Amino acid sequence: MNKHTWRAWLPWASLILAMVSLAVAAGAYVITRAWDTPVRVALAVAIIAFAVYLSLESDRIRAWLRGRQARYGSNTLLMTLAVIGILGSINYLASLYPKRWDLTEDKANTLAPEVQELLANLPEDVTAYAFYSAQADTTYAKELLDKFALASNGKFAYKFIDPLLQPGMAQKYGVTRDGTIVLVMGDRSELVTFASESELANALVRLLHPENQVVYFIIGHGEADLEAFGDQGLSMFKDELESKNYTVKTLTLATEKAIPDDAKVLVVAGPMQPFQEHELQLLKEYLENGGSVVFFFNTSIEGAQEPDANLAAYLEDTWGIIVDNDVVIDPTSPQQPFLVMAAIYEPHPITQKLTNLVTIFPIARSVRLANPDDPLRLGTEIIKTAPQAWGETDLTAFQATEGQEGTIANLEPNPETDIMGPVPLAVALEDTQSGARIVVVGDADFVRNGAYPAYGNGLLAVNAVEWAANLGDLIKLTPRETVQRQLKPPNSYLLNTIFLTSVCLLPGAVLLLGAFVIIRRRLRT
Image (cartoon, rainbow, N blue to C red; front, side, top):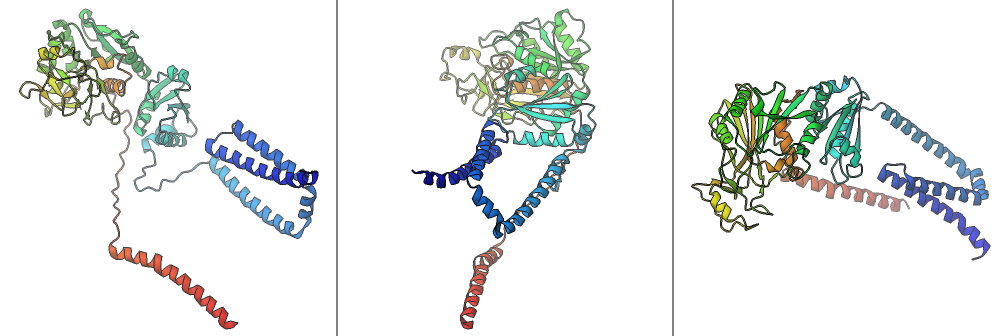
């Protein structure tokens, strides 16, 4: 290739390189929305290549600029630049003073008036850290946080963080599951595990009005160690409660004369020894005065006397909650029949956040209501197994199959003595007179560290404590009126009319008009 060939080829190669690099830079920026190294390098290559083209074709460009076409083209270019400048100015002003209009009939895209007022009167800046991994869907959370930020007059900001890439931030705020949002104001923080308008609003109210909520874990009966980090400990449960601003303490009933006045909730997590009469009396007085207790019961598979039998008897006799002395068998479990999976969540505040989550119970017993329709005690069997499961009451038969891992060949349900499925695994009850709240779950292993992080186990445990604490909705949102819209399909007459007009009449009219013009021109010639 001689010198003249290079001289003719190089300008066009530079121009093509500049255009390709510019397209790459624009495409990379549109995809990543970041002014990162690839975008900068591609843009730099485009500028250098275009400069080379201008230097090599300076004479031709100068001659073109002096021509008539350039003069007319310059006018067009100036008008185009003016339009782009006007549109850019409008876009810049719109970004400085954002304004949205909700054109939906039921204002589905507008925050409740109470939330707008709360955000408008924030005393100091609030930052929301949304911990979402790359695989999580952030669409709804981002739209919701955008609404909060726009209504806050600049006092509410948010940032998405990948907990896998920044584990230090997740550990700092006690985040243990994907999709958690942490609201931070000053030195205080609140965790939101379910992104919704009401959850974020209530977390803001708790930030503005912090109260000391104390949760006591009853000890002295062989319960799991609250501080232990092993599989049998409760440290994960404790840490998550503390991350939600609860103060967690232990309480030995045998040495107390009364339940402390600051006790918001008592937790009885799998006692291995029976309660004494004095201890049962303290629990009875506490509940009669409107207290709240969460019970997690152990299951004995040896057929021996249950260590918590007197506690179970108290719940049945006084509150109508039956804690059966059985073992739940779940033949639908993919691992082993003694590992029970929740199949049914009844509507309740404890389970409303568990809709798309599985909860598993390593070894469970059934928990039922003696009178589900009691108007004075509003009880709900909140979690149930699949219909194929049953509660095996013959523990000697169960012991005979203990060595047969993963099979229930020697066990068959007996409709006369066993609890047939769907088997209830947990009960939540509220006394309408005293205000007492009781949650009973037929398994204590699911809150231990070994099973706590699995699926929705941790969320179920925390939800049970929060419902028992009876904090309720700290802010009542104005309910939206649901608008029913029906799309009626057109009848056959209308469909035929649309087809005839769009497929036949309009194209036919164009063809006829074209034929008329052609014939008229030929007649003139």
